[in-house]
Structures are given as C-alpha cells and as structure tokens.
Length: 76
Image (cartoon, rainbow, N blue to C red):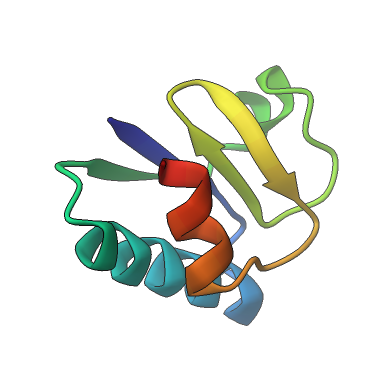
C-alpha cells in the first residue's frame, strides 16, 4: 500500500504526515509513505489545496488534516 502526502511543507502538511504514519502503525499495514512537494506533481492529482492525502493513487482528502482514526478507516 502506498500513501502519498501532497504538501508544500506547512505545519498542517507535517501534521498530516504524522497522522498517516500513526494510522499505518495502528492498522498494522505495510505501507510506504512518500511526500510529494513539487507543485506540478501535486497538480497532476487534480489537487488545488494542500495538504492532501493519496492512498494507492486515489485522493482521499484535500485541504484538511484527517485524524488518525479517519486515516486508519481509509486504510481498511
């Protein structure tokens, strides 16, 4: 499973990355987490506002910071 954090490096973006890591650990999932910071790469996902959370190529959240429990539910 691949998680991508689309971010510009803001504090909310960092919090999303921390929440995603905590959710993956809590769910016991084998995931790789990648931070995408290039604006062109972010826009390729159709995302206009960051931070954004992408799981296996699908944008799950944009412009907000889902909590650990929310992300864990997204991971299945």
